Length: 266
Image 1 (cartoon, rainbow, N blue to C red):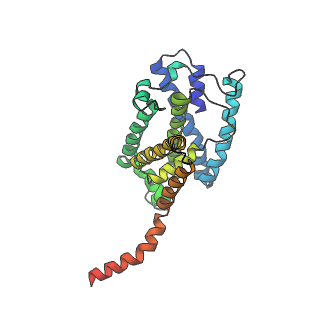
Image 2: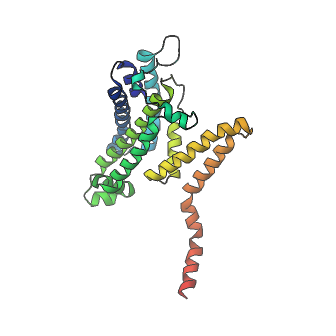
Image 3: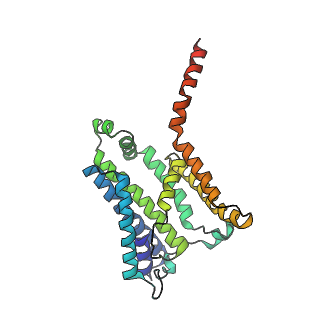
């Protein structure tokens, strides 16, 4: 997000067909490099990627605040100056079509990226190696795959996609970056969406639609029907719980399935 903001502010004057793609590329590249740090620590030192990622989140938060304060700060405000119009990816016609919601070009690009990611992960050799390392690194190493390289590669790709998400937000929704006192929690929402989508690109896409619809609808329900928005969070949490607990459910139902199979054999 910060890299996209920096390019969007400092490279004013570029034509729109260069400025917006350059800002998106900067967000993706720096997001990938940042996530690759956690991948390297995992591959080279065996550091748990969850712990290192959470620690890097706070380092990244304060580093982003430092960059905004030192190079991008709007005088008298606690945010950066507005990004150049040539770097904006907002689509007025699409926003009006969706009821004046905050829909932008990033929504369309996200769908394209889901398709490309599916092709890469399920139709290419490199994608197969990444999935194999994720399922069983020992078996992948025995098969001749470079485990450490694929770990770093997987983290770099995931960081690129996360960086694109942040770039979409700042270029398509906010149009500037604030000095944040804490994480907005978007990354944790992404983990929830990945669980709902069962870590499949198209499943994640549908999970994101469900998550976004419930979250967006909770605001309207709160104003129109006085329904507490926490109700929606409870619904989302329940969905995530039952999806994450599917292994426990299978374990509980396994004796019943075994008994039914025996009865059919007899």
